[in-house]
Image (tube, rainbow, N blue to C red; front, top):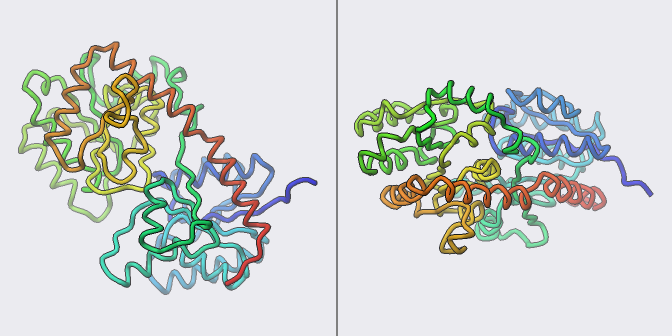
Length: 393
């Protein structure tokens, strides 16, 4: 008997850029490829074209709003959509839309589930209550082992409701063989880098928690000869409504690195960006759910340096957890600029052949372990299991 055709509604604030958004688009495409129906509700964004090319449908709603009245109105809109389109599963990927989706699912008797993408601050009981929507469904996907443990500790969620499904990379997109000389040259031209430059890439939004300040302090601590060859590329959008960009620029100028720092903004060709990098850094000062950019960088053959906080240990094979000849990068204690300086010094001074060997190990590890095929199979299997269960609210 053929598997039942499902209609899955995913909820996300926007489709701009980021790990949650990419995961949403990837699963929508996997649903369509398997003969199911995929609907995504969001405010839209630059990834909407990719979603629609994958064959998914989109419903535009103000799901990024945290205004209680807007969230309530969204729940009514979603309930209508669920009934009209005979939705089988509501899958929320962020807290504000999750509350609207949870209320809509309850009112329609529909399966509700979530993906817990990140560590959310819990300063008080209200914030804990607000965050709790991410574990109120029939199932919760944790994007890393670290997130799964966080869910257990904070919410006491039963083990059978927690499913660890790591974020992944698309091997067809992040393929070193697919990035030719023309794309590399176009990226070098956009950044203004030269062939002999040591390109240190930090991919991620310009926010304090990404650790930009730590990287700048680490670079400033390198010896003058090595430091003069470094070009620091900050690839990511500014975070709206914050003054961090100005503080960062002031910090850079104070360390006399303003001529070496490139604010690249949003980069559309990230495979070429990773391939051009000498080393890719994520010096996050606070845990992230699962830093996919480190997988992408390794898939493209770039050695990486990752802050050893949260799931940092899950995205790099680094000493002392593995022998040096098996390492795909290095790790360092979060916030420790001197330790990051030492790691940078080690990789930047490596003979080119040794650095390439490290990058090759990373590419082979990521492209064989963190696959889109595994993400799709595991998520769709969970959808099938949930669709066959009776919902009890």
